[in-house]
Image (cartoon, rainbow, N blue to C red; front, side, top):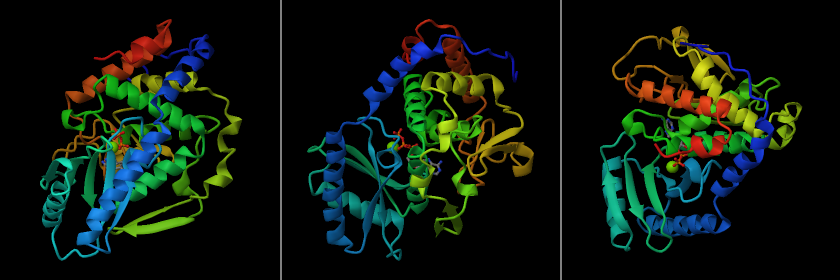
Length: 335
Ligand code: ATP
Ligand code: MG
């Protein structure tokens, strides 16, 4: 199935840049939305500190990694040292505090894989998920944000891919398709692989930032201002990259043998990671290595049914990018 068709890139891609850039721009959140996020964070900080004066709140996920489209929910991490109390108790206490301050739809999900409290703030209209001491998520958020600041094409590509995935219903981890986080990693990997490369591999460079979280050393180069020209030898435009991204996942990626790894800046072998067979619920049908938790396959949510759905969607997108005279219409058509 791999390389079913070698596609020769269509010749009129240039005229598609303007429409893709217009879609990208329409998805960028307005400044006013950023202000509302700050406002909500300030309110939550005030409420949390009355109970735990030393606690701190961090934004993570798409509101902090620069891959957030407008009207996204915000993800907040509560960092609290006092871990004598267990997470469930803290979450339930948080839910109480929020409820008595007129926040709405307050729910403590203590049994979720990542336990959270959900709420909606009627003043800003924003919804928010709060987790506890999920420091790895705060650090991977910084890694993604640093990559976004190296070359503008990453943010453009990731917005378009996320918009496509949401429109086509393949951004639903509970249905076996991929998280936004996984799609952004796929975009970073793809831009590391272009020749000349559009993105470097920050984890293979000199360490300028390092923290150890839950026994995992997270180290990478974060002096991004020194990398401003990194991708300038590569002139590919957004329409070429969208075309090539879908072509890669439709026809070029070796699903049977390869793992994508932004940690190494390369494709690595499934064999080497012992990801060749199903272990428990991890089927490893599409392998995306987490940059820090390297034993963690972001594709593990994908099952034998949803892999088919995903690959058909990649092929559909690749074919539209190749043959459709007006791909921007068809590509994002609701499924
Ligand atoms: P959206 O705009 O769709 O909300 P998002 O960037 O917030 O996108 P999510 O997939 O909701 O992405 O994940 C939020 C954050 O949670 C990610 O930025 C990442 O820090 C963390 N995260 C999500 N999934 C994982 C995972 N499987 N392993 C480690 N961290 C994860
Ligand atoms: Mg989110």
